Image (cartoon, rainbow, N blue to C red; front, side):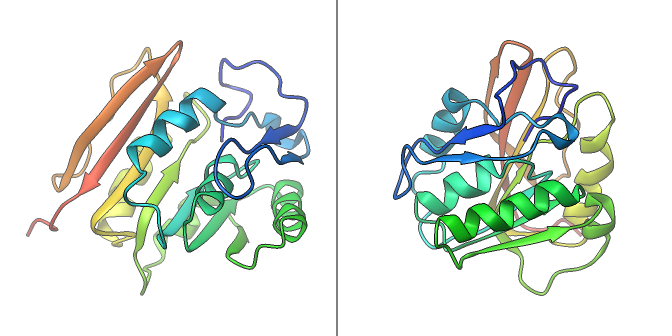
Length: 198
């Protein structure tokens, strides 16, 4: 998801899923928080990167907003997706869109992201998507929480977006930068999680 700090054109509150079972389905979402979905071209690149890892995967979509990344993952064969966003209107729209798609594989959590990640999880995720508002230092704050509380299993994947004018934040020692591209003012990265360092 991207919010109004990001250099993207207005979407008019409509999201189009670009691949999988729900390909070409159009979904509406409120303008609350200035949400802008990750662009279709970026999503296509990301899901090409993940094409051999999606089937049956357990996904976490942080700063979910319109749900573009988690819904695309479910459409393309992910087993489950948890959508986390702090804005009630967006959380409600996600629930409505999951019902519209007749999907029982999505869970929506309306909570502050930092608070959510402070917990520990008994069931680490296979894939984590994180597209936070820009210029607020979110990645620097959240990378350590994700690693310390084992939110992603060894061998899993973490996708992040950040502003291109800044370097990619330093990742935990057991994360390897697998792929990285820039499109205009947005840089997007895919990390692979290795064994936890002692």
